[in-house]
Amino acid sequence: MLPEIPQEQKLLSKFQKIEFMKLKAIIVEDEKHSRETLKNLLEKFCEGVEVVGMVNGVKEALEMIPDKNPDVVFLDIELQNGTGFDILTQLPEITFEVIFTTAFDQYAIKAVKFSSLDYLLKPIDLEELQQAVEKAKKAKNKEDYNRQLKTLLQNIKQPKLSKICLSTSDGFEFVNTSEILYCEAGGSYTTFVLKNGKKLLVSKHLKEFELLLLDNHFMRAHNSYLINLKEVKKYVKSDGGYIVMNNDDIVSISRNKKDEFLNAMHTMM
Image 1 (cartoon, helix red, strand yellow):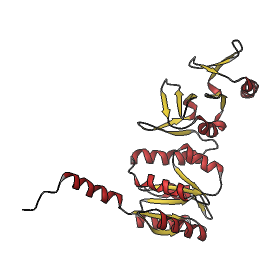
Image 2 (image 1 turned 90 degrees about the vertical axis):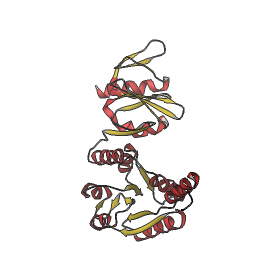
Image 3 (image 1 turned 120 degrees about the horizontal axis):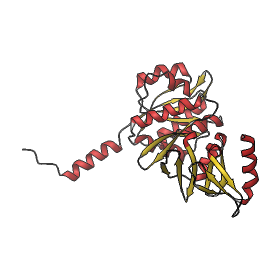
Image 4 (image 1 turned 180 degrees about the vertical axis):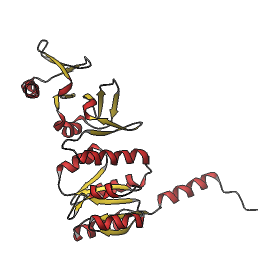
């Protein structure tokens, strides 16, 4: 009779299998030098990553990805014969993690951020690459992940980004930007106050959302508040001036922001 393996040893063995499991990667990049550089970085400095293929265009990627069944795809946004988004929309299903790479196209980067997905700016920083790989190794809720990608692909087709993915302690919330009344800073956290009365706490600074939402009729009215100008009920001059939102919440406005706020409201009217 074989001796029973202690529970601690079983757990350690299971952990080791997970820890050293290979992560199959495909690189989609139209510049040969960039492809080779990324491949070398992954193989030399990212433990457990195996590059199983590299392609330079949309057609080649659509053929290789289903064949190789990768765990992660490093996807250049701008390709000579299309975009990385073209690849995602034409695949019958997405069963892998996506890490976008790009040297430009601010709108595309903004769309990726709106979806809470990972991207790397070229030239690729080694530490950022390692962090992205570690995130890809961790199992994700595939339903949420596919919704993130769906949000991205919907946004990229529109002149303005309309839906944002917010990472909360419970998972992901997919919110139409028009449903946001205002955002309130709380140290390294931001609280989103929605029209339906719901509040969402997100572990990111308000500044990050200010940069994302400025083109969607949002304005930083105060160090602590980012407001949806379309949801302003009134402006009160007394007591130094303050803003009343459509849900009757009172929002402070900085003295040096008053003229900008009034001009913005006048322009919208």
